[in-house]
Image (cartoon, rainbow, N blue to C red; front, side, top):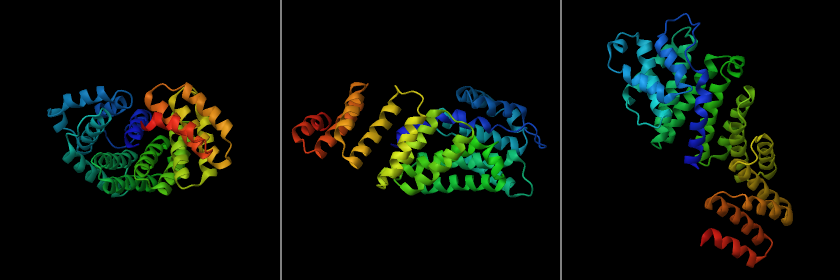
Length: 312
């Protein structure tokens, strides 16, 4: 599950991060070059990384202001992360985190400094999470959320920074999902949905959160709530031919059967999904669901026939 959800987040990061470039109307001076690379990374992180590496060690970096030097290190770390490369400046990132946290703690920090502090906390958290240091990752993610909540009004968070808030809550949802901490995953998933809906995020982003919340309600045996989120995910799905749609329908069908014990409509749906399967793994998932329903109906020969396809 961790690899799947990380893959989903890596897909949506370019969209969610597009709001985080330095604001050009700030009173403080920020390097136009770094601001342009910040914007470029929203769409082409590989190109941004190449440009950042070409600047490494040059006098142009050494002559930057302290804010811009730390901004550079933050950008380099983000670019490595988003292109799947190893972190090469972990020590410098920690220095940037301390620097931006100190600016945020000073009187009247500007919006850029607030956002840089949040991004640095998120990046450090991502590094720890990649090393399975979940407690430390959670600590920095939560600190980033605290900075956003204290640095901006609720209206600002819901309008100007909705994408950024959605990103942070999505990361927390993913973190607690992988820990099987159901109540926490549900809480942060719901928070993420508030912001995803605010800026009309793409359907696939909302479907992932809705399905995740439904899964955790299912794990808590809160069937009605799980069904409500699965149904909402199905209604939200724009592409009914994709694997995500078939998986959500599979979840909902299984849950409906175990709630109402109506085997025929459930089996009809699952056989249709089986016929649409595109890989051996997907066929195994559909056969498992069919076999479980046959077991529930005490049709043991049929159950064995489909479960053998999964386990043998």
